[in-house]
Length: 432
Image 1 (cartoon, rainbow, N blue to C red):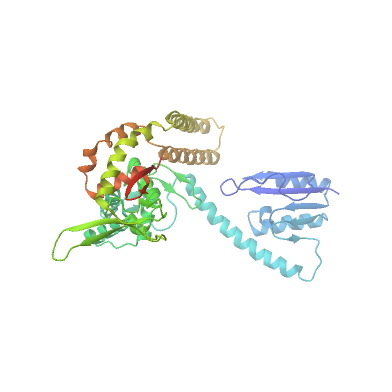
Image 2: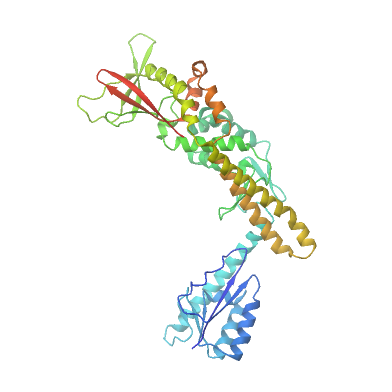
């Protein structure tokens, strides 16, 4: 009793199935990639030596149209072969009363799937041409002939939104800023989508999650984009209120005694303009509760500790390992670009046909984009020189609170208050 299996894979949409994915002991497997040459060989072999069973994943793999699928099924049935579609629970030998109803439902399903497949194939061919995906064009751009074009009337709004976020690190603040200056009202959720939208970085992202870099003019540069990603990762560790709070220590300080985060409270004296700031635990379960600490004292000790400990922490980083990863990625990118440059010659000498060349080009471009994204997440090479520059007390004293907040969160993960009887000390936990 022979068992054959057949699979069809569209290189634009599908992945080749694994050899042991059938769930049966198969004697012979016919696999088509792009064209159905093996299907014709299967039908020829079946006429000479028909198997007992033929396995397919789904019936629509037997043809590009419903007519082709029906003709193929009829040929197999005429040879007495039992056709089984393992993903559709279809068995041509089933003699139940519901067989005809199930077959009608399958025909409708095949029609729908083939129509959907043709649409997806059209989108996939546009991807191979690195054309923008269908749908609404992101604010700040307009659709050109084969790529996005910057809209000079709306792009300045997006540009200032990014600049405000980079300056103050507050998503809500950036949303309020463009609402006030340009009367452009967007939600915080939309603002976050802007910050992560690849289009603003000059890249094209498709529905399948694949990204191709440098497809059109960007609104923000690569360094700004990497900095935005760092800010978003940093803010994700903080509460929404702390992320946009004006004070530089907001969301960073915790009490090691009661394990509670500390919030900033403001105290004023009646008929006096002067105010006093304190850090107090939010959820202290101890009795008596842990005392509040003057905000300015914590800030001064934080600056002193950074100037002393940051250079030591940076020196302890394993830079040779980072350099090795960086060099490996750069070599892989260079190798992929070299292959990319050879593809036109391979088409000209008929080694590759046009469609295969487009497919290979697309895969190389997505691989390069993925490696460039990994490269952008690595620590900057000049981290040591930056650590030396920010280890000068006067640097911190000359900053505004919003600027100081930006730099503190760039380096610090947590500031722990360690209480000792009536006194206290602090310990800084750096991000790296």
